[in-house]
Amino acid sequence: MSNEMNFGGAVADDLLEEAAMLDEEQSILFIENGGDAVNSSDPDGELHSDGLANAFLNIRANGSSKEANGASRSSTARAQDENYPILVHCHLRWDWVWQRPQQFLTRLSARHPVLFVQGPLVEDGDFEPYARLTQAEGFPNVTLMDSVFPREKFFSDGAWVDAQRTRLVQEAMSGPLAGKFDSPVQWFYDPMAVPSFLGKMGERANVYDCMDQLSQFKFAPPPLIEREQILLKAADVVFAGGRKMWEDKKKSNPNSHFFGCGVDVDHFARARSPLTHVPEELASISGPVLGYFGVVDERMDYELVEKLASSRPDWTLAFVGPIFKVDPAELPKHANILWLGGRKYEELPAYTKGFDVCLMPFALNEATEFINPTKALEYMATGRPVVSSAVPDVVSNFTGAVQIAHSHQEFLSLCEAALSNPDRASIKAGLELAGHNSWDSIVAQLEAHVQNVLARKKSSRKALAGSGA
Image (cartoon, rainbow, N blue to C red):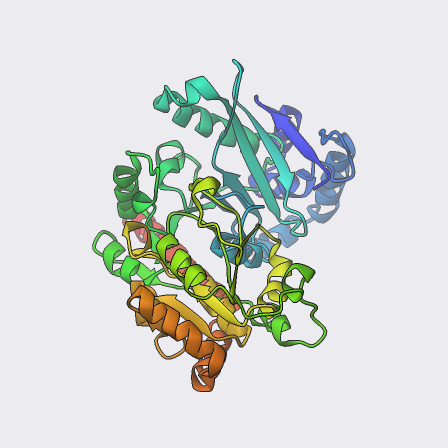
């Protein structure tokens, strides 16, 4: 987004005061229409009275007939029920690796405004925490929010941090974003955000989309387990990214559902197109290329990588992805290992076209016990053979489409077989599996679950009102 807004206090009081002069329904429309107060063409991202005046005139023109207003109330209520705003709390950066949150939320943003609150940033110095709002590039209905904290106090006063996170989001929602995110559905990825936001945003429902067992990751904050339990019990619906994870979460919340990985088949099918050009850093390699894309972190089996590289110096092992939570100096170093770093999501099909075999060389440890790798279906959509270590969800979800190894030696042997005599039946099964698991179909099911929650809550409110309680 070309526009960026920094703020740390209440803003747009004039917007709210003007809106207060209208009746309740008109106020909502006024703020939503005039709430484009952050003008996308304005480099300073300041509030503008022109938009407010135009919105006010539109409402006056449209609202002159009380009869017309009354007739439209039911349709307005239905639209509000179906087009609810979504307030997201996520530990991952929007512009980092493109994965489950972005895949879900970009699709949801076609029908719902999305405020994506990213995990706090820290900087040196003594200053009042402040926030930045930007628009996600290419997705005009997705607003990104960063909060910036002084480093020393952030790591020494957790209660203060939680309170400041609440304040900054509330100020954004009553200021530059006024009216756009009233009565949101809160969508949690980050259990650490629970004390700041659960029950404090005027939310109509709370969703927990559990994509990873974060408590088992390296450097997990100690309070995470307790906060996740609070979230599990309070959430109206829970989505789990892995089958084993779902079996665990449904013990705490019976309205839990397993929705694993999806795939953008058309995007990754580009790896099978003659029009797609392999990047030169892979195209120039004469021998077989065995490749991986994704985060390079504690979930990878580096002893396995070492064995593959040393056993077959004629192979090139190419790793495409950012290095995270591991020391780059400690990665295996061989002439036939390429640590290429991160690449854009748009580039992945071209890189995968340069792979002869796609790898998922995961370690079998706490961090991988519950993972359901997004890349599995993405690899399958490219039509390449896939070899993986035996992480539980790969075994339960993808046996028959992925070659699964239970030891380092078996992994090496399966790679050799995939190069010399690819299993066409497995590749075909993978293409079919990818074709039946689009992100679009999963998002439609998620929305249906959320709509069911909202309908139940609305029915309960009506029953309560009817009883006079």
